[in-house]
Image (tube, rainbow, N blue to C red; front, side, top):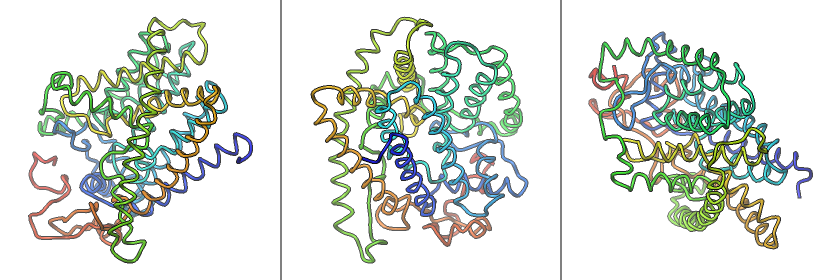
Length: 454
């Protein structure tokens, strides 16, 4: 035992923060990172681009927020990792908002479980320490819950203003903003929060004003307009994209990961080529992940049964538990609706803004098991989970592609031309980015073709 609950939560927080800081120091740079850093570098040289990253359906996300979030940290520390530190800070603020909210809604045990399943969640932690626009989704999801809860019983001008400004910021960062917009509409419709109309109006007005420079840029270059690929309701028509999205909602609370997160290579640590340890641990991680999804599935079945009983409009006199259960249920429904509407196949990062809602069913179900005669088994499984997640996080911090230089499935790029940015930000010294033959890949904003974003 680690003492009182506060001490245990604080210990988990400190451990997660230490791992994230190690990841920031070791973070690497690929194409998406170079595209975002290029926007920030241009911002520090007086060129504030009013369009963001390329969307899954082509075109660019609207607005200049991406350039601002990448550029402001570079004014403080001229290093490619400075925007990653700002992203890590956003995760810290997001967790503080979530913990402050759930502290009054969950039991002491559930709050501890939330710290393990959310703050030490490898999906979240892995995406807390490198430069990428999608990594901001965790903060925006936290602001969503906090501002909705603030207006559970009565409108709040400041909370409504912040709520809509967060949605406006999300619009400028990623097309997945639709999930939280739908969640807000559904939660308002079902009576889970009462927004202030003046606050909503002011937030919408300020968000629209921020997009005026982008509108001017689109008029000059229509290729910047997002969209153009796929069609609405593609997830329902082809079924697989929808199933894939549901799979991610089940995997977020689990130890089953996507992409190359567990493509371990310990060559840099061992001092010799790693042909055995990395692949063996990757296979173990895959097995643990598959087994842990079963717990997520069981929790989801339990949760859905209770949520179905609460499908009626939320009564103002209902208790905290019912409110939180309903918030999670309707937020996840919004994610499913968004997956159905999406014109492209769902990718892992499109649900990052609802990871906090996705872990709540497992938190509540696990806490319930700890109060039954199955407590002994539940405690053992919880200890196994904590031990496994600790080992996985440490392995990720030193051996995952995003946090090591070189090795299997490495993160890096061969760029076509040398550029001042690569030297000023230390990219060539610390990452696997190299300068190759002229005509090879370049960050989109350094290309001459206007259709590529400039």
